[in-house]
Image 1 (cartoon, rainbow, N blue to C red):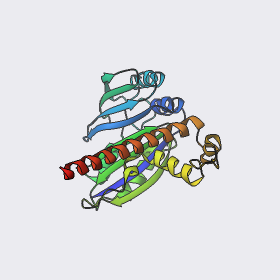
Image 2 (image 1 turned 90 degrees about the horizontal axis):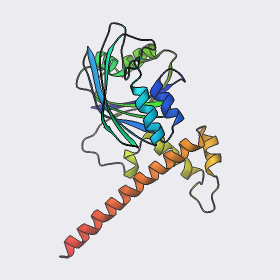
Image 3 (image 1 turned 135 degrees about the horizontal axis):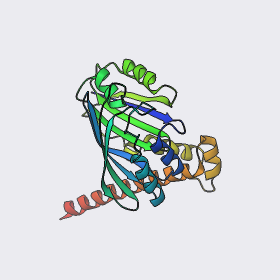
Image 4 (image 1 turned 90 degrees about the vertical axis):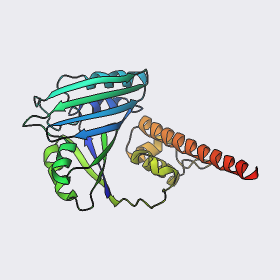
Length: 250
């Protein structure tokens, strides 16, 4: 098995969810499940963020012409259903389902056509960036799929191939940062390399954001999320080691 990771970068006005996430950089969306057949698509997404961001995101999902992941910019005529499974001031769980028409398609539909059945999908959305991770067979024609995706996406979004690697079930984990989203890991690495965490600092947040060409608020949010994830993992590992030491001393 291999994993193929790539990202789409939507232009303004081409995707209502991307527009909301760009305007609310503290709000992100992660997929919980995604299933595709030649005729349909359903998925469940979990969003977290500010109250304003969650409210705007809910409205975007409910837009009559919006079908999750449909790559057709105009109304494709698909029968799309949206249901809220859970809702709070800072979280949203959304179920979406749509029946495909002759003119609409999506990333999962193209993957099914070119890469075959038995695929696993994982997505993460932050700002206008939409990152996909697909677990697929070793001999699947990834190049053909990516070319076809480029034809369907057209001018509404940029595309970036991030990695294509083998999955080794016997390989040990790569450390606490392996679970970090790519954007957070990149922000953290740049901050370390440019001396943001040194005392005194060699760069401040505004300078770092300018160097990385991202909004200051977006960079601040990515670093805070990365720091929180690493701190939680560190405490969990430290607690486990402490418990094992106590058990060994009994």
